[in-house]
Amino acid sequence: MYKILIVEDDHTISSIMEDRLNKWGYETLTGHDFNDVLSTYISFQPHLVLMDINLPFYDGFYWCAKIREIGKIPIVFISSRDTDGDKIRAISQGGDDYIEKPFSLDLLIAKVQAVLRRAYSYSDQTLNVIGHKDMLLNLENSRVLYQDNAVALTQNECKILALLIRNGGKTVTRTRLIKVLWDDESFVDDNTLTVNVNRLRKKLNSVGIDDYIETVKGEGYRLI
Image (tube, rainbow, N blue to C red; front, side, top):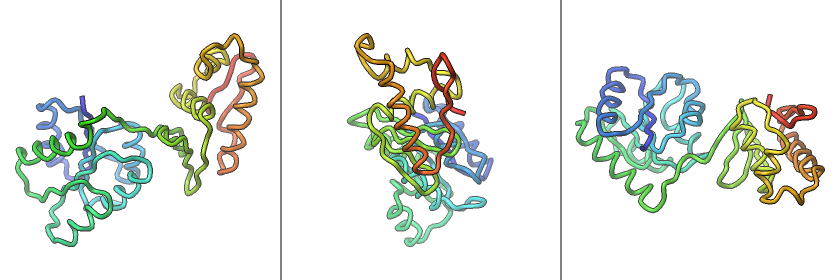
């Protein structure tokens, strides 16, 4: 089931779109925190975003640019702005299509289906970015993003951090980490995991991320 994030501050319009998309079998979420659309995007992990341009705090162009920094999923702008300049700006800044208000719901569904078909006809991609607090991990290129800084991780470092993030602050045992990193853990020195975690910590420190990984003595590690 494809997931669609609706970023629209008009409650009536967002409710109508959500209802029609649900009837067509799409899972939807309407974002309400217009001061931090990116966090909603990361937590929901949609396959497509329907983005209004006129929004509180920051406009749709701003959020499109932020999403484009970490993901390639389709973004369809929906706006009452009807000038060629707005349409050109929307497409040039990373939008995949543009729908003018007012619009028919049949047109909305047709556009959504067309964009999803183009984007996912050859693969069933999902959002490859996960995060903890204000740290983002791009699983596609193994890069950590923090504020305006970025650092590349090795494959093992990326696996460690991804597992810790996905466990949401719960302790991940050393045994489990070793099994994830190496197929046959019986030949792995326990110190090898320690070395990998320490290298990961140093890389996080290099971009200003301090003390996120906590050692749970006798058990493993967790994010705090």
